[in-house]
Image 1 (spheres, rainbow, N blue to C red):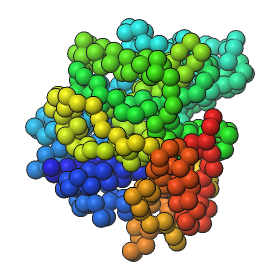
Image 2: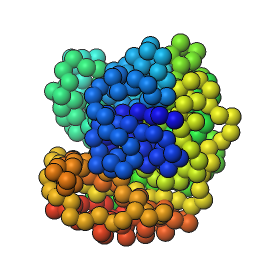
Image 3: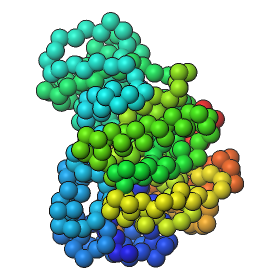
Image 4: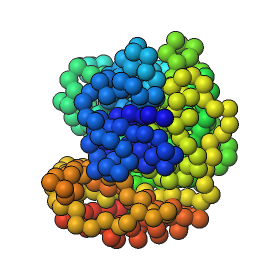
Amino acid sequence: MRILLVGGGGREHALAWILARYGHVLTFTDPNPGFLDLGTFVGGTPLDAAAGVDLVVIGPEAPLAAGLVDQLVARGIPAFGPSAAAARLESSKVYTKAFALRHGLPTAASRVLAAGEPFVAERPWVVKLDGLAGGKGVWVCATADETDAAVTQARELRPGAEILLEEVLVGPEVSVLGLSDGARVVPLLPARDHKRRFDGDVGPNTGGMGAVAPVAILPDDLAVCHDVLRRAVAGMASEGTPFRGVLYGGFMLTPEGPKLLEFNVRFGDPECQPLMMLLDEDLAPWLLGSALGALPGSALRWREGAACCVVVAAEGYPERGANAEIEALPADREDLVVFHAGTTRVAGQVRATGGRVLGVVGRGADLDSARANAYAGVAHVRFSGASWRTDIGAAP
Ligand code: AMP
Ligand code: GLY
């Protein structure tokens, strides 16, 4: 298949890696040094670059929310991902909360603050900005005073926007993703990312400092998560905005059962990286089937064992990105692959230029050996200021 991949981060490198393994001819609009051996960088706008391909695969949320799939479909080009209307499940937290309530999906108690509505917290809340915020629009507050400060900060960041307040839930988190063709949902292995910057889950929230799959989760809890994805897809169809693409449910496993924290309308980054290391078949028929409204009738086939992705970030991430030459990287092997996320090729040299620079993924017979492989790879990474968490995949 001729496939155009839109997006240039670690998630897209992992998608390109698995698609190239199955012989697909790849083109890219975004530069990523990791793409170099996997296909051809064509640049230009995705609409221009899509001429003549069999499928366009869109990695990040912003082009989905902006309606790229709608534009491609209008030109008769199959595109993997939701329409702009269906992408609201990620781009508007207020819309999604109302949707979850309409369809009886388990989620935290909440209230919506209108722009300028007077508010003084009487207890701690989680404060969420409406709209895409690149992982930076959520404040988990410990006190009423912190909540007031977060509301003030949110209003400064985006004056005029609504704010969602949510009850503070406690428990381990799990990311459950499912491919959908608008009617059916085929789940991927449950995964977990590590959002906080530093070991022990402290420090600021980030895009994700690492991820593992599969996650040990009670079968009953997993069934609830799968049911939420299925009911969401059924709900979207019944409301006239069918969801095609990959639906990502972020859940907290509370004492009362799993509760939905958020939907994303794309593969998680970095969850995608360990998931692609574990996938044991060609992803392309699934992506095309989703785009055309007819997923294959089977379940996805996975390798035995586990995979662990450790993100090597810039020292100053999430405030600042890197700017350093990458002096050494481990060689890829069957059980170790390095995905590029924030790197740039300058005059033949690869430089660390982003916040999250690399995702080093190890695979093994179990999570311990996957972790060991990933960290053995990380030990070979050399660039000035390279920094990573040492507890990705360790028992929570
Ligand atoms: P979100 O973008 O909505 O997933 O929020 C980002 C992170 O904030 C989540 O992964 C959780 O760690 C945390 N979070 C979100 N909602 C809640 C909640 N209601 N209670 C506790 N933590 C939350
Ligand atoms: N890893 C979380 C996300 O992709 O939003």
